[in-house]
Image (cartoon, rainbow, N blue to C red; front, side, top):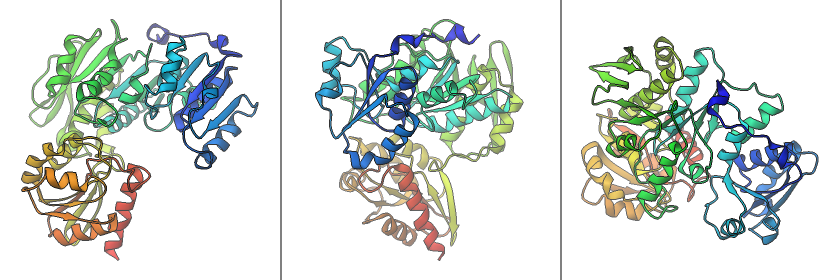
Length: 470
């Protein structure tokens, strides 16, 4: 059944060919390793200097001991691309930089790591994209398929890259999966060519990454590429409560299933009172009462519905889906309960890196919220936060480069407090909160002005909350 849905390739033609991989992060290293296994002569290029790439270079050298990989750090010199017959780029590399445009003008194919991994991984894909909720839905779906007795590889934009997994399968270090459950980002979808998931899902689309895209429409177009290669027999799962997303069903080449909190859909997963139910392919039934779902919040109910719909389409029984939803505690940095101290609940939502995510997070609490926000701006429109901040927050504590822009956008809503560091923000939030309140870290920004990444930011927050106990 697998080969019906996946275009398989004979890559003996890569032997001896010159391939350039741009970006020596996790996915770039995986692509280089996979290409080297197939006999390609690989040049890995990264604009960062060699001293910041020491660990990545050492790991790549250890996994490709036949010296088939040349590493050129510190910029994008012409020699990294001269003679290249294929270029593979990592998601963090903008697909329109001049060295890549030069390659395209010479007729050199430029693809992404996701596309390369898809061509090697001979298994059906269930792929998830959207502005928010991707990681939770991806993880849940992998658990549901695993609980049904099938082997699912879970990765892509989280965990192992697809190329890393493909290399591990070929090396015998990982069994070939029954399903590849892949979180895919807009960056990865920019450079697909043949990528065709058997089941695809678009959870939501709200403005994000406008520091990379010219407009929200450009960002949305990148997301919608997830279904452009689908065909009959494939399924596209859409959020019926997001009008722009639901409208994509009219142009989808695949059949469409929906999930909705608001309406009973004829094909998909929906709410009937406080019961999650399904109608799919002529069968129907109950899945689980909402009260039994361990993860909380409006957005997590949507995530649970999306994962359940995809799992049903993958052949997982409703009772197996329910068992996973009863036990899954949620992911770190995504509305993660950190502590309750002196009657105040501290929540780590460091993954809330855009306005849409923060809106969903704020709407999840009935208690008054002290919101910690700020970081590096992604050309976001923070004024969209003002109504929910006025409704749900009692104060906002601002950190990072975007603090000034956020203050202007939220002026006149609630008291605004500035903090110099995460430690200062946690202390000032404690002072602003009363028993029964929530202190919520949900920054609406990237983290790179003060932290390595959103995970580092979340862990620093948890560390500082821990100090309050002391």
